[in-house]
Length: 484
Image (cartoon, rainbow, N blue to C red; front, side, top):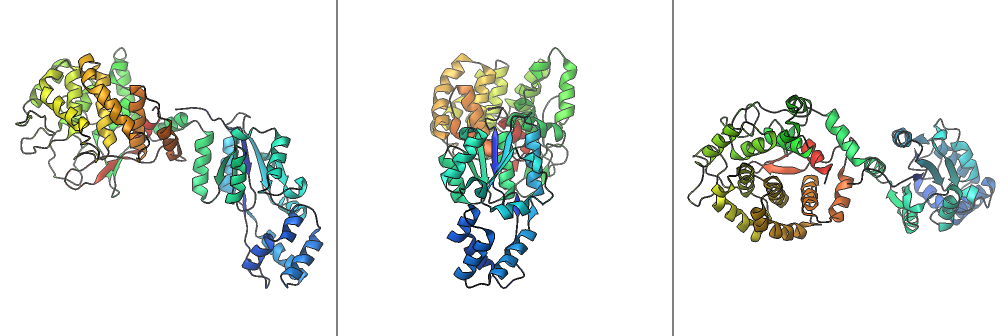
């Protein structure tokens, strides 16, 4: 993921972008008539500086059967209604300040000389702009390319490194035709997010989100319940490269990272998905092989304890030789992703051969694309593929790679460009990176999903097997998205 912005120039429209105003006046002239006046050839000549204000009002008065004096009062009411978009201006100020002088900001407006003179009386930090270009001053008007070319020539801006923001699609199309990145100002929040994403460092912003929200990176269900669970916390640690193996020489560091970033249930042996009392399920929830396998591969532990736990896991294999989900013989549930994670644990300790039939079943799932609708406990096909890649990476087993990797490459190539939320896209990108596959398509889809606060939108990774309620975690999505 690129960590720096290629953009050096911002160009904003003024009316209905940097300033809002109302066409509802105290005169007899309706907003609809005012809109027609604003698009009339006479008004266009006025904005180009070809006729005076008095001549303009006289002409449109005749054209629309309105007293010219009434026209003047109506537009004075409109000017008086001008309100600066202080939230957007604050965002621009922040983006410019943190660019270390590399970002230049300009305004470009279809506006007459008298109207611009009045506009400059408004209490706005005009020093924020490196230049303001008006149709009256240039003698051209958007969407005519002459106006854009004049601005480019005057500023020396590189169109390919310029962002243009305007509320009218035709004006944005002209900017795009010259190579600028055009944004239609139709939704304030969407535009602000786009500016942060285009001009900010996505990795640094994601890191700041995790830092600010450390110890609060809780999961949430799709019906709005906060959920304290261990699985996402372990994945966040792994995704942010805080693996146990990285700190073997400094044992205190692992405790520090766990304490500062995530919340985990203390355990010396088996892991439970839930932290504390289970939510939206039975009051007594068994330990599971999935979280336990993840816990040992992320956090490590004493080798004799790990082998003891794996010995116990071998008691939870069904008649087909497939490892199950829970340390509970009453809950005989199969999930291919759980199987993959158990395989990862066994292979990491040199015991993968003990789950040969499970491995064969997993390859059949991969071969026949049985994962395309997700699984009992996992929402997307990307979860199965991602954890398979994780199995290969952690095991570093040549024979296992020969058995799985060629087919996995084919299957992930089939998924490139498919619909997916932020966590699915991040998993897909991470797997492609591990397999050495280029995937610009999904990267370009993922980047705009980063929010103003630096975190990515929530993505749904797993679900309750019985009810289908989905579970997501913005901290996990962000951790995965930061380094695809």
